[in-house]
Image 1: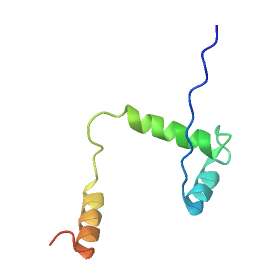
Image 2 (image 1 turned 60 degrees about the vertical axis):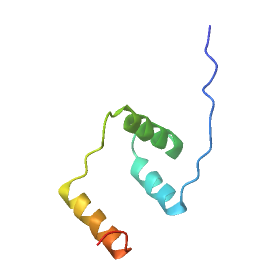
Image 3 (image 1 turned 90 degrees about the vertical axis):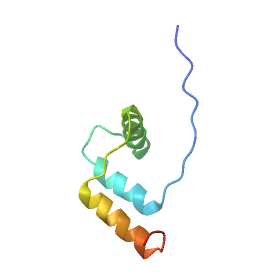
Image 4 (image 1 turned 60 degrees about the horizontal axis):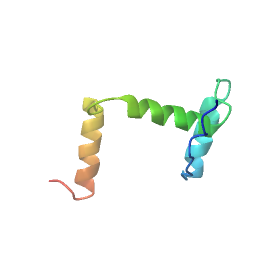
Length: 72
């Protein structure tokens, strides 16, 4: 007995991101950008708790929020 295929949903991404994914998957086991994105998102969902930011990520985020006027 085979199970029914998983229900699918379409998500759009910017063309430059799609091109970056296409470049990244060349020569890998991923046949399509869709397969790569599905794999990455599934792995991300497996993580528990918060995804830690590096000190540099936090500094850049705060700098960006400050430049946009969200924080002092």
